[in-house]
Length: 364
Image (tube, rainbow, N blue to C red):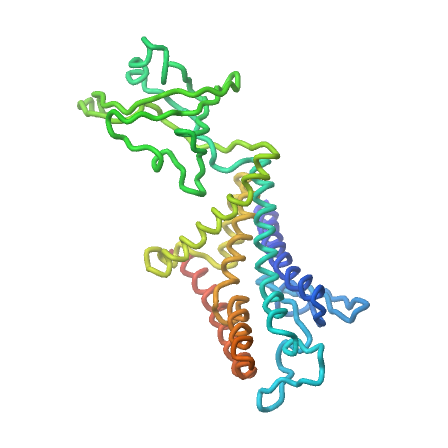
């Protein structure tokens, strides 16, 4: 059975690659670029077809990425590295702004797909947007009994939807730990959905300190609001999902950028990351436990690809955009052969890095 989930994870990864390369392809076609090959995967060709426009559509053996090859994109310069100017179809003869749009097309499609996948996730399952009350401390609850308010009105399995009018959102860090402070006397308004009737109500609770006994029957002071919570997800309405999917995607991108910053500042070890094999393994294992997890990975992976490809590292779209922008500003390109070498070395380093972090992840 695990083989099925591994194949499913590979399909998910290849879907993301397909979306990215379609971005390059569609933008290129709209701007009049000539395309020689559209490939999913690297290495030996498994399947290939040439369409009526002479474009090769390929499926290759290694599911580590893909590419959309444009006519004259590289290797069509003279021995001095100068671009041939007698063929308007050459990629490097197109206006720099058009080439930048083509390079940005893949990132844009990943971002748009992340929004669409976020909408599907929110309207189908939700995502960490609900606290479920799993237990109520009776000693705390008794404080509210006389006034029939606060914890006197709640029961186990009731849901907390908002705290002081703010939606709970793990993406943006709106958790009970971040939105409350357990200081005696602090009060909070909880928006509750009753488990049995689905009635929505607001209750006021306050932080209090009461004497309790620990497992060894020693008296201890506990400062809390008196409830134990679990995390749950609740689908949102179609309209709410439309309203929230963009900000949800921005939240995912923020998480990616935050993780990248922690990595750069050495606050996050390499073992916490993972390459292609780690992604496939993680998705397969998690989805095997809960199929709904697949819908969480879709927008997350799409957002990751969008940010990753924008990085100005050689061989990535961000680097191509940078080189082309420099060419546009100085009105002449950097030596094409030098640029090609830089991108090739960058590609080799990227592949080596992916393999390295996979090894570190699996060996840690």
